[in-house]
Amino acid sequence: MLLSTLAAAAAGAAYLAVRSWAEAHSLFVTQVDVPIEGLPPELDGFTILHLSDLHLRGYGPFEQDLVRTVRGLPAPVLVITGDFLGEPGGASALIPVIMEIGRDRLVYGVLGNHDRGKRINTQALARDLTRAGVRLLVNSGEVIRHRGRRIRIAGVDDPHTGLDDLDQALACVPPSQGDGREPLVLLAHSPDVLETASRAGVDLVLAGHTHGGQICLPGGVPLWTNTRRGRFGAGLYRRGHTQMFVTRGIGTSSLPGRLFCPPEVAVIRLVPARRESSQA
View (spheres, helix red, strand yellow):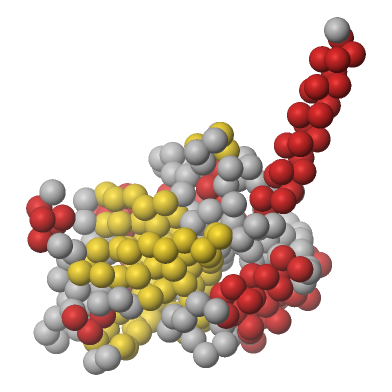
């Protein structure tokens, strides 16, 4: 009886190990429509590709699949919300991966907690990202112009480690005096920034950090999210006027697998809010 129980437990553990490894290498594309009140018609359908938590360790078949997938998704803007490297050796893959997925589009990025770890040379990482074409937003922002309209995009340093300065970032992208709504998009590694972003009138926050839980119960229910100011796993959240999308990210940390939480490339599309939705 004991032997059969141990054998069953060993078989179950082996199954979970194999499944979690396979799931960590099975990339999903998630389509997300984000309704924005007062969105100008010229910006209806404006698309942003959102990646996070690459945790690059090299350039193997999974990274090749990531490049193929992202290259096949048309969008004028790609954002990467931190944790670029999984280990120092991943730096050799960083520039080729970013240059491939960012070709022919604007690429913005912010730093995550792992990008400032003891094993990572943050200054070298920032130089490599710049060489690869990433516009690194460290408590700063820029304006994107599209069909005669403006989208303000700001990025904060990592909120998880208390390095974010939202006021400084938003000061870089004040609204213009022209006619029409100018959506304000904030990039942050951690979703911990949601409350302050809501008070500041941000329209959309794009964040990562949680890996969606990485190891989840069936249905994607996270066991742990490593957040400080709320239990955010993955998906779309709202605080007042502000919406936030938290991606499950691409790579892994601590454990080399995922369970009920596959990696994802998020396709974020801005759409006008329906009148009945805004009144709900």
